[in-house]
Amino acid sequence: MREKSWFREYGLILAAGVAVGIAALILTASGNPKNMGFCIACFLRDISGAVGLHSAAKVQYVRPVSIGLVLGAFIMSVASKEFKARAGSSPALPKSRVIKWSMPPKARTSG
Image (cartoon, rainbow, N blue to C red; front, top):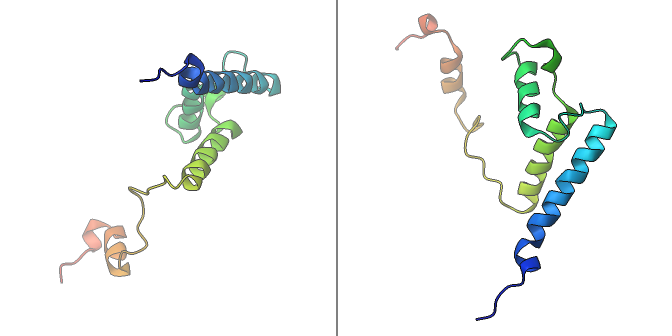
């Protein structure tokens, strides 16, 4: 059995780390706070503030980087045919059921 070389086994991981490091440098130079760079936790904190889940005024906006990450991941999953919708709205539902579910409970009648 032939052993794999170190570069073949870890080269892609190393390249991904270098790419993320360069992206963090570019984002920091472009205006992201110096303590953030390419911090996914920070991006999630900012998005949760933008949708009103907390009230810290400094972190209540959606960064364009976050939108780019989500769109890029979606495009890559569609391009590689790995995208599978598992939940969400279903346009195949009959309109009567959608209207019934959207009415307040007192307005629903059983008949």
